[in-house]
Length: 434
Ligand SMILES: Cc1ncc(COP(=O)(O)O)c(C=O)c1O
Image (cartoon, helix red, strand yellow):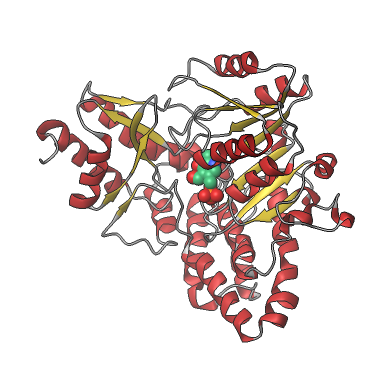
């Protein structure tokens, strides 16, 4: 991973130079600057529990503290200054869209592309900016040529919309979609690779793998699957909706040719942002979702031919990247794991009825965890936490398992985690109200 690129000096000199920042919420960046000076050069593990540091980060968000948001996996709030950069650009666009939006703001997508590529560790010519992971992944699913009888292998823990997209393709084009299953938690990374391997036949053309599942927060062995598939000439589409900027990795750690992600989850960019990575030599074989001229066949921008759209949203990815770098990927992941362990270990100790279906270590998971409470209906428990205590979690109901998905964020405070634990402990004792 690249080292933390922003420190107090670069941030403040940027502010002094009026570095395209919204003046009205400059204080939120000052929070990051203050946090950076508190952090110094301390390693991520040591900083993870430093509340003075994290309280500065917490205040960069306008979180409503009457609510406890433990569903940041669905979609995260953006730090205040990131949101306001977008609002500033929307207002500026509205003054004269044809000039301000198209001529002034839209060309700045190129610096966003450059910085995303630097974070992901690829060439900018391999990054297309999309509106979310669905658009990125569906570009791949619907954009690759496949014939009737060609086979695609997924797991039954891939994201629902992605499975739906493949199934629509099966109905339309006669391809065969195979879904493998694996236990939660998995037996081992090798077992997952083996399950994929056993599903392959000479007709397999594509594997779609989720980098980290939205269901349990399990990180899957992407590189091993990519290597195994490449030897057989099979393409691997990686759904990284929850992975990018959540925990540190780069393209070469995965060795993948295709990757789609959302940026409104863990990068904390405004809602409606994502990217698609397609390795240069593979671009010709993936058609765009919306048509582009033949001259763009080898140009990654063909995936951005979506008609009129706001420039403000994608340009506000830039301050979100700066905010992410200001914290640093390792530090962010270490804090998220500390928050995960705080609720998971306390509740596991509270009762043998509690099961955590997410392995609590640094290779298999990060900020997302799934808890199952024996004897409590998951949907009712989620509703109770929200309706009675204003604590937001996500009920996960899968054919093979279920539980509450808990996803704190860097702005989550320790007392918020503790109140969640207290309320679960209360229901363990008293049950759910009837
Ligand atoms: C694994 C996975 N893939 C894809 C998506 C779709 O993301 P978006 O709704 O941002 O397109 C999600 C959303 O939660 C997800 O968890």
